Length: 117
Length: 112
Image (cartoon, rainbow over all chains, first blue to last red; front, top):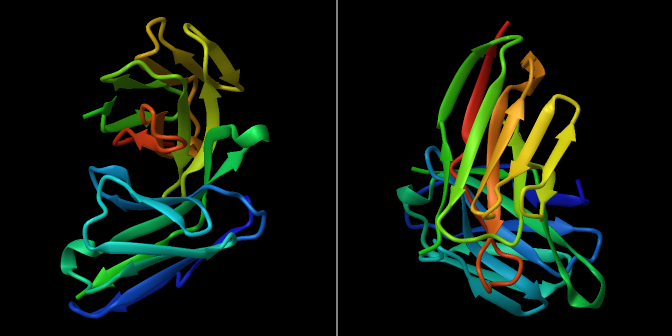
């Protein structure tokens, strides 16, 4: 499982509150990703990171921000949670090859189930 | 924008029957990957195909990459209850590093 953990695993929060989800990896992988999974939509990329302090938006980034101050931690923040952000959130890493070559295969954490009431 | 479509969305089979899911991309892909997600679990990488026309097998699973590198299929022979889950294909977003675009997935249920 590439040593990926996510916390919390379950969270229920109220509309308008800030929420931070944490992804932690133990193997110094450069590339990390946050996805959300909703029925009928598969996995959709929220944000990704290609190094410490290097992040970029995915296809569904509105309402989300990320930070990566250490290689091992990638944080996803919902500044003001809405009911439309009720979802399962997965963190993933890519196995980086030699000379910066990206290996496209991704390995996922166990997920965080977030409910916004 | 770039799209990856998967069909069917759901498939219900009797144990022992075969199963196939198809993946179609709106653009040519440099590679395609397949993942499996068990109910309540997380996606797990199965395989990556890179070459045009490539066929790879993993026990009862056969993966194909089309000649034009725009489509792919996963075929399971003689399904078992352990095959239950959702199968996703994914391809790299053009010129965007390691980012992937996923199909919507095919949910397979197997009746014993």
